[in-house]
Amino acid sequence: IFIRQLWQDCKPESFSISEEVADMLRGFSGMLAKCNPVLAMSIDDDIRKDILDAFGTMGDKYREQVYAGLSGNRISISGEELAAFYDRYLQYIDYTIRENRRADGLYHAYNLIHFSDHGYTVEYLYEMLEGQVAVLSSGYLGAAESADLLDALRASKMYRDDQKSYMLYPEKELPFFLDKNRIPAESVSDIPFLQKELKTKSQKYIIVDRDDHFHFNGSFRNAAELRKKLEKEEGLDKQEIDALCNLFIEVFNHRQFTGRSGTFFKYEGLGCIYWHMVSKLFLAVQELWTGNAHECADILNTERIYAHYCALRDGQGFRKTPAEYGSFPTDPYSHTPRFAGVQQPGMTGQVKEDIITRFGDLGVIIDHGEISFIPALLEFDEFMQEKRLWEYYSQGKKQTLTIGKNELAFTICNVPVIYHITDKEGLTVCMSDGSLLKFKGHKVNAEISRKIFHRNGEVSKVFVDVNKHIIKNADG
Image 1: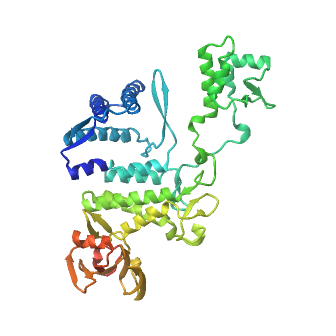
Image 2 (image 1 turned 180 degrees about the vertical axis):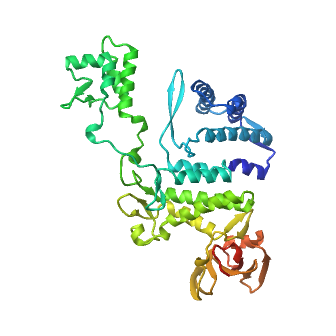
Image 3 (image 1 turned 90 degrees about the vertical axis):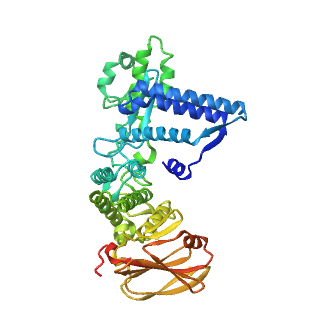
C-alpha cells in the first residue's frame, strides 16, 4: 500500500529494469490477471496448488537466470504497467485478509500449510494479538470494521481484566508430563501393525506403561524418523505406514509447536502481556482514530475507536500505580506474567511505539513537509494547573521557560512548543532574530517546518493557541 501511494505521489512515466526482472514481473502480473476469477470464491486445495506451483515455476526460472549470470539487457517498464501490477497484487492481499476472518470477528494470524501431490492445505493456529494489530494497521478495514474487530478483541480470551490489557495469546492448560506421548486406545485397535507389536512385546514402536496407556517408543524424534524405520519392515504397505506416521503427528502435534508462547509461563509465554505488542496495538488504534477523525466521515464508529483507545491507554504502565504495575510506572519492561508484576526492564522495542504514540497524543502531524498541531487526544488534566519553571535543552544548552496555567510544553527537533488552552485557534512562531510569524489555524508552512527540522536555531519557540473545544474534559 505504501509503495502504491508513493507511486501515486511521484507518478513516474517509466522505469529501466533488467530484462530478467521484467520477465518475472510480467509473468507474475499475467498470472494474477489470469487467476482473477478466484477472488470471487474460496480457494480449494487444488486451485491453491496450481497457483502456487505456477508462481514457483516463474521464481525458479528467475533464480536460475541469476545464478547463471544476468544478461545485462535493460527494458523500460511503463508507469501504467507497474501500477496495474500493484493494483492486482493488492486485490489478492485484500482477499487474503478477508478469507482469514474468523467466526468470532478476529483474524487468523499465523497459518500452517501442508504440501501434497493432491493439493496444498491451510491449517489455522490459535488466535494471536499480533494478527489483530497487523489487520488494524493494514488499511484494509474501514472505521466500522475496525471498531468491530476491537470489540471482538476486548471480548476474546486474550484480554486480561486485571491489567486492562492484552496477552499475546489465550492461556491454555498444559498436559502433565505423563499425559504426553499417549496414543488413544481406539487408534491402537484400528492399526493391525500396532496390535502385532503388542502381541510380540517387541516395544520397537509402541510401549505400554503400568497403567495400560500406550506410548510411542521415545527414540523417534519425528515422523520422518518413524517412517524411515517402518519402511524397512516387511509386510507393511504404504497405506499403513501413512496411518502410523499420521498418528504420530496427531499425538505430538509438532507442527503447531510455537516455542515459548505455548510452553513457558514467562518471557512472552502463557498468560503474559507482552508490552511491545500492546504498544503496537495502541499506536494502531491511535492511527485509526486520527485518520477517521480527520476525514469526519463516520463519527459514530470513530467514537467507538476512541473509546478503545482510552481503554488501552488506561492499561498502559504510566496510568498505573507501582502496586498495579509492579515497578516504577514510567520504566519500560518486557512482559507481565499472570502471577507477578512487570519483568525484564530495559529499552525494549516498546519505547519506540510509545514515543510515536505520545507525539500522536500531542497532535503533532507531519504531512507533505508541513507540521500541524492538533492535540485532540490530550486531556485537560495534562495541562499545567499552576505556573512552574520548565527546563529543556536546545542547541546543546540548558534553557528555561515559565509555563503558566492551562499550558503544556514539549520540544520537537530541539524547538520548544507551548500549547495554551483558549477560545481561539492559531499559532505564533518566534524566530531567533526576534521576529514573530503568525499563522491562522494549526499548521506551520513548509518553509518554517524545514527550519525546525534542520535544528539550526533559526526558530526559537512555537506558541500554539488550542481551542478548548478539542481538549477532552476542558472546563474553560
